[in-house]
Length: 46
Image (cartoon, rainbow, N blue to C red; front, side, top):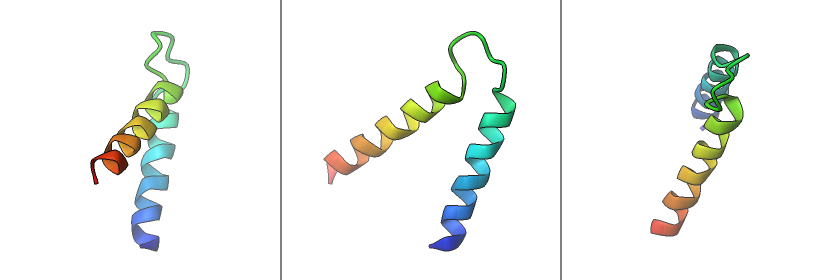
């Protein structure tokens, strides 16, 4: 499990860095909301 957490941490860092300064609304916070919504959908399906 720790390896999976590190992968997620690295992916989040990459997205934050890549989308820094994004002005179209598809920034880190948009990605974060989509990520969290996906987790909610996953949990509600099982």
